Amino acid sequence: MGYELRVVRESPLAFAELAKAIAPAGFELRESEIVARHRGGTHAVGRWQGQVIGEPGSDWQVAQLVRLSSVLGGSLVGEDGEVYALRDGVVEVVTDGMVGEIGKFEEIIEAGPAVWTP
Image 1 (cartoon, rainbow, N blue to C red):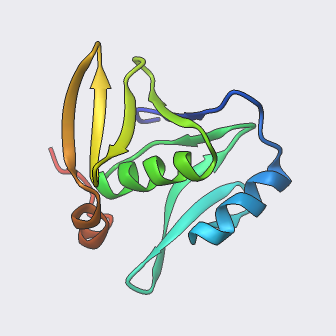
Image 2: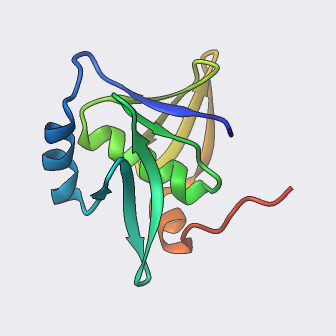
């Protein structure tokens, strides 16, 4: 299991509400897996386990999770309490009050789900 990011909301979201909320934003639900399209293929973004959980392996997946959290009216939070957000077109992570930039959202989405390498 990799590093988990969770969509945190004030009120719980039912599975049926999830399916209804994500479709207009271009996400698809396949059983409990949430996928997004890129260049003709579908790629996993997260999964439903009573809440949305993602284990990103690329900046593309992080950006998609940020977008998904916004669609669901929540925040994207990491295991260590850091918060991921989109501000002025840039995907950011806030850890202990320090803001770090992951990159420009549109550029990350265009680049696609290339897996991080060590």
